[in-house]
Each structure stands twice: as structure tokens, then as C-alpha cells.
Image 1: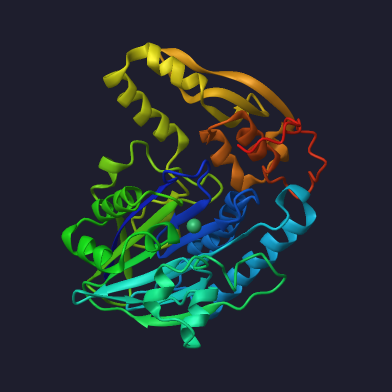
Image 2: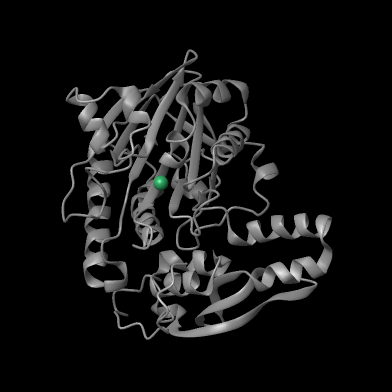
Length: 399
Ligand code: CA
């Protein structure tokens, strides 16, 4: 039985206020999506795309290339429609790179510049093609691959999910071999850590979760200018059936249990003989808060902690109301959060796939950033705008 042992990690990086990346790790399906556009609701686009494509993981049968492509196309339509219906989400788009492990072969579907690699016999091979301007320039011979790596326009995409009513999806079948190590990542890793360094680090860390942690740390050491997401799959005992496990080291690096998707059946029902843990999305804000709390107690004590909490914001839920809080999304001896601004949005008006994200709290560094996040909270199709959320302060200051 093909055994898949996976690790996954996402991190906001060192320069961004919001993590716009999303990922999914299921029984046979693994996805990385990198939401685009800074203030253009990238975090909503990537979460929506991952939500739609990940539904395929519920089926017990192998996922065909046609099925995967059709689902990515459906995600494109949904993101595009949502963006055109809701002015706060206008222009949102995302990359999506999804791989389904179907026993002795895999199916890859890809749009954008997130990447899929396979490490086989010590050599890295990129399985996806970047849909970027510089990749096109390389293909046309205008610049070299080396020049592309540091080209100032290297993040300009020629294709993204949701930006147009239709999109062309790269779809490929890949025969698997024993000891293949597959890595999906957002460009927050691949643009800032050289490929030979990634290859070396994948060779150094046998545990896939430890490898994810090391790669995220390397991207942060390189400045962490972008959100960073890495999903690593170790393939062994290649055969037609499949068994999926989360890496043992996951507990060490993920302070909180992965979010369970309440809307779906447990993974064990999806695929016979598969014992998978589903993990979604991002480093929970709560986990980040706990790490910060531990660090602060070691350093400055409760006084420093309270001072830090006063400079933090998050969008969460108060009772049934979407609310902007000042503080940290956790309770620790004393309450570290206070209600700042309730919105007129209630939880039942919020798209179901966004509930877990709100319940864990979406961190922001400023009140303005929190207000922007609140305005972009995706709604159910019945609850259309106007949202009635307090508008950002008129100062126009960038946050
Ligand atoms: Ca990115």
C-alpha cells in the first residue's frame, strides 16, 4: 500500500501583516494556494479555492486528472463570481497547486507560481511551470533562467485563479516511485531560498515536518518578505492503494491540534484503510499568540505581555457578532483582549468555510488593518453587501 507521510507549515513571514496563503492536507489530496494582491482579499481567494478543491478529498476513489481539472475550474468560477459580486473582494485571485496521490501515480493541477517539486535520487525536479511573465521571457529566450530568479518582475503572473471567468489549468499525471519526496510551496519559499539550498535541506531532514520547519526558517532568515507555505509528502511502498499519515514531528512544531473541518466527514470515512489527519490553512493566530506569550514570559513578564497585547488586534467573534478586538486571541490568566468594534455582521451571514478562521482570530498589527480584514470577511451568497461595517478611518494612512 502506498504510504504517504506528510508535513506542512505556513508562516506569515517577516514583512506582511496577513497570511494570504492557504493549504490543505487530506487523505490523498494536498493543496497550496497563495492569495494575491495585498489589499485585494488574497486571504479570502486562497481560502475559498482550497475549500472548493479540497472537497474532492471526500471521495473514496482515486481522483482523475479530469476530475481535478474540473474542480479547479469550478473554484476559478467561484472566486471570480464572488469577486465580481462583492466590492470588498473585487480583483481577488489566487494561485493553486494541487496534487492527488492515487496509489502508484499522482495527478497535478496547477495555476500560477506556487510550485511542485519532486526530490528523486537526490535530484530536485520542478513538476509545475510558473505562469509568470519572466517564465515566458525565459521560454522565449529573452532572459536566462538565472536572470529570472532575481528579476524585479518575477512575481508578475500571466495566469491566476479567479482573475478571469475562465482559466487554463496545467494538468499532468506523474508516475510515483519509492522514496519520492514531493514538495508544494508558495513563492515565499522558492523566491527567497535558492533551489540548491532547498535540495540540501530536504536531504538533511528525514522527517517531513522538520523539513517544513527548516525551510520556513530559511525563508525567514532570508528576510521573510512574503508569506511562506510548505507541504512535503514522503512516498513509500508504492502500490495501487494508499495509506496517509501525518509526520510524527508535527506535534513538535504545531502547538495546537490542526483545525478540523467541521463541515465534512472524518477522513477515515473518506478512504478505506486511510488514517489521515486533516489540516487546514495557516498557523493559527492562537498558536502564534501562545508562542509570543511563552517568549514574553521568559523575557519581560506579564507587564510586557499586557503592553504587547495592547498593540495587537484581531478579527474574531463575540457571541454571534464578527468583532474587532484589541489584544491577543487567547485567554491567559488575565484576559488579553477587549472588544473594540463590533460589526453589524453576524456569524450566520459569513461563508461557512471562513468560520474556522474567524473563530481562531485573524491577527492584524493595526486597527486599520483589522478593519480591512473585517470588511473582506466573505459572506454567504444570501447575505450580500452592503456589509454595514464601520469604514476605515478617513486619515488615509497606510497601515
Ligand atoms: Ca506569495
